Amino acid sequence: MKKRKVPMRKDIVTGEMMPKRQLIRVVKNKGNEVSLDPTGKKAGRGAYIAVDVEIAKRAKKEKTFEKTFHVKLDDAFYDELIKYTDHLQARQELFGKNEK
Image (cartoon, rainbow, N blue to C red; front, top):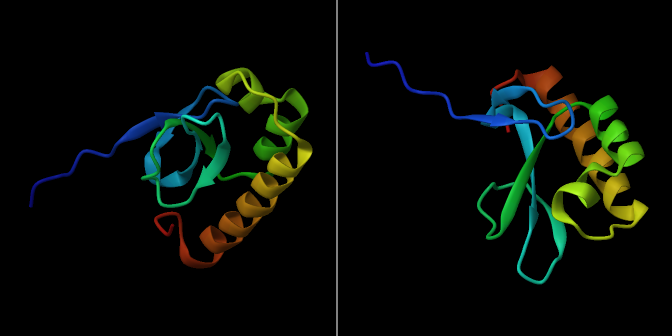
């Protein structure tokens, strides 16, 4: 059987390259609205962050997505990101790393 190429993306907080399925996509659309993209198919500029609560907290502290997308974000977005990351991290621990 042929071995499939695994798409890699860079975590914008740590700068580490990781498989795309182990990352969360955050997208900025044309209206400068920043949101989580659980499907990975929303239109707009995307950035990736690892499924790790500590990295999400670091992104909040350093305001990483504000710097990346050049927009002002409130703490509610980062709180939602931390909550979603915690949920996905728990799922990965239960079902394995390939689950999304």
